[in-house]
Image (cartoon, rainbow over all chains, first blue to last red; front, top):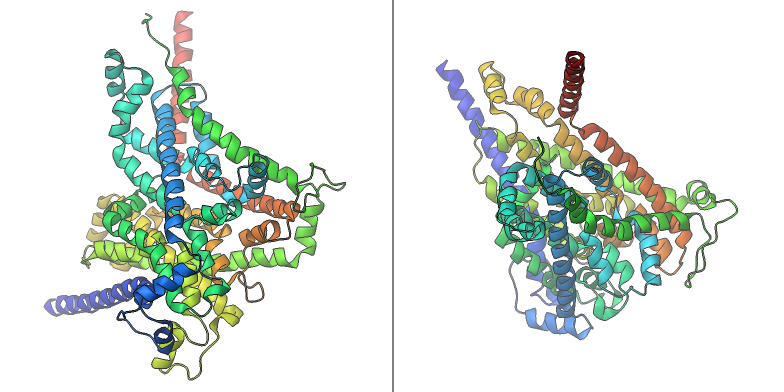
Length: 284
Length: 324
């Protein structure tokens, strides 16, 4: 009996070691490409071409200079992306919370059908309507405008769905009743009492909406043709062009600059992001 | 007895109105518009008035029967999705089994989750260009690595080979998404009633038996959810293949979204053909969503509702009898 147990724990030790090795290898695999990116951003093109190195060099500023010389304007791209993503995120979380609150609190005749409708349109890909959307915006003279990238964010079915689940689990209608007794109007009840209560869910959804908008390539690529309107992902796509063909140092520099804000945000908020991903999966 | 009260139900309509309005303008109208364009001969830089073709289904017919590029893009999309989804699911399930096994008690799970999920948050465009630069020829980090390790003597032109190019695209997708899938599955396992695991342990089930007999069946809904959201995501795959190799070599990484984009916005202005392709894509996504909706409908809740209804009608019938 004792020997069986002993061999069992020995086995478990071997298995555990294997598991740790696999996990560490996967972690390295996650880090390595970005590590190479940041290191190569500080190396000169001849250094990069002479071989791989995991230690930074001293050519960061010269890479940056070459990059900025060639009409690559990361600050403009950053600002454009920031304006679009912030505005779209605000629209998404505010109006989705409002719609979810309307779904949970009030007993209206079309409540059931509306919920079914949200479930149905949740998975419609934006690519499927892109041609009609573009033609529509072209007629409105809204191409090269940020509005068509912001206003559609008001209708975010998946976020409404998530917020509804959150409200169903946390909201007690007595709070609403109490605020009515105190003479608060329905809108101010929502804005002053319910929205602050929903903050944990709002924050989670805001992070994901912001990142999704920030990383979106397809729609901005279709709608924005003027250089000064380019968002970060379109700017990144310029790095592929012929003007950087031989300037590897500055390509890595450009990539590093576009990825840096996301790394900062991720490491500051990673706990909430991981928790948010987990919630997204059990939402049904 | 009637209480004097305010009817609040109108606020249900008011609060959902912005959502409905934005949906009608920015989603429904463009979809219908796209569908209409699919039946027209709209092409060229200057938009013409809508003119339905004599055979309205001409664009669809041309795409399905006479357009090898479109068929190839559908095939590639399917292939790239399957070759990234299967390994992604296998690895995510394996990691889930390891991380949730209490007997193994793996430490540092928080750090591993943060690191394995990391590629998902970084802009796909950046990742695509990064990989295309790393695999560059004749000198790039991967070529240097291969030569340092002695795996190759001469530089390899990775991105010229169709299979390698497709393999790298699926690998990037796999690498970006397995962490996400893993976190969702772990959350799913955490939601399983612990009593199930306890009774399995009492019955003497080992780790593998517990995983296949208890964990996997309980995860059924979450697995389906992951499958279908991943399918719709894979169907619209754009950023990585578009920026990695622009669909090359020889259209081997051309996806359906790239086909639509290429037809309409890269100089050929074939809006009608792109719109018809979009509608076919929409059809596939709609079928997948319908499937998800059907599979995820709450069976227990539906049963409960039915029982309640039956109970109520019986009660009403009784009451009616009594009143008579």
